[in-house]
Length: 112
Length: 115
Image (cartoon, rainbow over all chains, first blue to last red; front, side, top):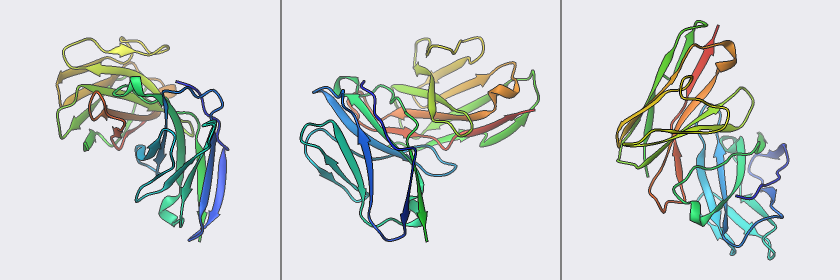
């Protein structure tokens, strides 16, 4: 699975949108883009994933660049509960059922 | 989805002793994973445990130090043997919901402190 690059940390104000970037210039055609987050004192949890098209779910939106070399996780209205480490992970769809490889992630702070 | 519980949630142990961490899943799963998260760091995979076969260890982790049992499809244990302060970490159990699953579910972790 190809590697990703994320900023170490980001800050946001409560109730404002947050755009978390991820670069993955060596992504392959069979790599899906996954986002997980880890709240304090908890295990990671699934946020969203996608291949080529933008994706929306109740937690967030995922915007994928046309060349797929970067993506952005969008939290539409940050709450204090969204303060967490966000991990952008590429995984080949042929490796589904296998483990994820976690990078350092982005630590998001949400200010009241 | 899968709900995972771990025991103990935390422990403080003395150098040279061993601790066994239990992982219980509320549904049958084929693959279970054990991760370590050192203070302030990301997650590192220790091993993959399939029911009915030996666990597969990642580079830098050995069976003598981290023996794993997988007696059935809902349960696994990880033992941290002959502990040293460097073993102080959070240990997390994780499962994939199925062979074609794009999601992985994690337990709450076991916070281990070795003194």
